[in-house]
Image (cartoon, rainbow, N blue to C red; front, side, top):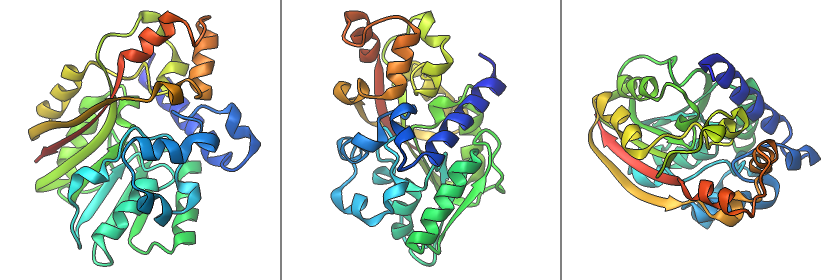
Length: 277
């Protein structure tokens, strides 16, 4: 898979998800979980509180996260936070309360449809301190040292150039700034037929890398105090209801209940990590 085709496929798939919010088409789209039936359940399972879920616009929670990066960040009033792959604005809206009226949250996303939905949600919720900008997380449209925190939720794994993503995060952070990231990694290498699947990549599976390799990207970018704060298996029962996972299974001709499928699922782990510039 080449970078351009993967990136375009990701943008197209997430764009369809954004345009289909609250429509019957959702059941046919990917999502790392089925947003219609499981978004709230998934958010609770991966660390969001009931209060956090209630304070954001309904259309911002698409059920495509794998953790709660804002829970790691210790974000303070007046600070600037950059959200890599901000989607419909879910994490950005949660963080906006932490930074208050004197702070700001900048969401970066490459999908025009996601940006349109996020801005609609921002207007609906009257968020004055949140701004959504079109941009590639491998080449952020931001000046150096503008952010106190960089957060990201289950997005960096989709990049084939994770080293560039972390280099960019380091660049835009102020000295002493922090990254707080939730993402998908591998405990064990995936079979080649999964790694070579574009559908599996968009489903947040084949783009994942071994934990030690992933952490090396963070260290090589210059970050210190790199810590894996938590490491959990994504709930298998939710993974098996994901329309995109079902699509991958059909493409690869195996039954989701097979031992082979369960073995592949067991290799995928969700982590939350933090590091300091």
